[in-house]
Amino acid sequence: MARAGIYKSEVIRARNNLLATGRYPSIDAIRSELGNTGSKGTIHRYLKEIEEEEGGSTGTQVAVSEAIQDLSARLAERLHEEADQRMAALTDKHKAEISALNDTITALRHEVESFRSQSERQALELAAEKTAHAETLATLQEERIVRAQMTQHIQDMEGQQAKDEAHRVSMEEKHQHAREALEHFRSAAKEQREQDQRQFEQQIQFLQGELRAAKETVNAKQQELIRSHQDNARLSSEQTHLRSELHRLETEIRPLRTTRENLAVSELKNQQLEERLAQTTARVDELLVENQSCAEKLQDANQAGLRLETELTAARAVLVSQEQILQKLTVSQTPVTKNSGQRKGSAENQESLFDPDKQ
Image (cartoon, rainbow, N blue to C red; front, side, top):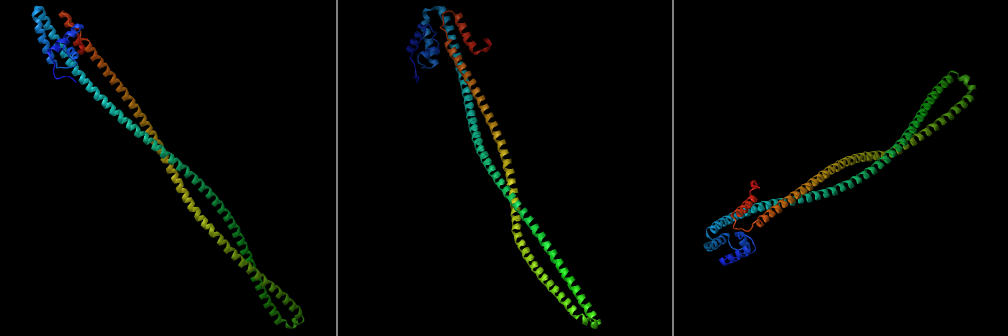
C-alpha cells in the first residue's frame, strides 16, 4: 500500500538512481522508483525545486534546457494521464463487454441445458408413446383375431340355422301334404259312404246279395281309415317333434344373438382402438416434429455460443494488444539529454502513439 507522503530526499535519491542507469527522471519514472508512492504534483514540485537549486551553476543554456525538460516532463505527464484515462476507459469498456458476453454465454448455456432437458423429456415421452402404440397394436391384433373367430362362429351357426330352417320347412311341407291327403281321404270316404247309402237305399234288394262283399269292402275301408288315423297320429307326433326342434333352434339362436351383440360391441371397441391408434400416431408425429425443432434450436444455440466465444477471444486479443501498447508507451520513455532537438523528437514520438494521424 502506498504511503501518505514522500520526502524531497527520497525524490533526489530516486532521480539520481534513474540518471545513474541512463534513464530519464520523469515524474512517472520517479514515482515507479519510489514504489508508486506520492502524488505527481508533489514529485513535480520537488523536481522543480531541485532544478532551481542546480540552476545557478549551469547558466542560461541550462535554464533553457531545464525549461524544455520541464515542458517535456509536463507533456509526458499529460500524455501518461491521457493514456491512463484512455486505458481505464478501454479497460472498463472491455470488462463490461466481457461481462456481457459471459452473461450471454451463461444464458445460452442455461438455454442449451433447458433444450437438452426438454429434448430428453420428449425422447422419454416418445418412447412411452411408442410403447403404448405397440401395446395398442397388440390389443388391436388380438381383437381382430377374436372378431374373426366370432365371425366364423356366427357364420357356422347361421349355416346350421339355415340347414335346420330348411329341414323344418321340409317337415312342415310334408305335414301339410299329409293333412291335405287326410282331408282328401275323408272327403272321398264321406262321398263314398253317401253314395253307398244312396245305392243301398235304391238297391237294397240288389245289395242284399252283395252284403257280405260290401261288409268286406267296409272293413277294408275301415282298415284304411285306421291306417289314416295312425298316419295322422304319426304326423302329429312329427309336428310336436318339429315344434320342439324349432324351440331348440330358437334356444340356440339366442346365444347367437348375444354373440352378435358382443360382436357389435367388439366392433365398436375396435373402432375406438383404431381411433386411439390414429391419435397415438398423430401424437408420435407431433413429438418427432417437436424433437426436430428442439434439435435445431439446440444447434442454433451451440452456434451462437461458439460465435460469442469467438467474439470473447477477439475482445481478449484486443485487450492484450492494448496492454502491449501501454507497455510500449511506458518503455518508450528515453533519457533526456542536453540536446533539445532529441527531447522534442521524443515528445513527438510519444504524441504519435496516441495520435493516429501522425503515424
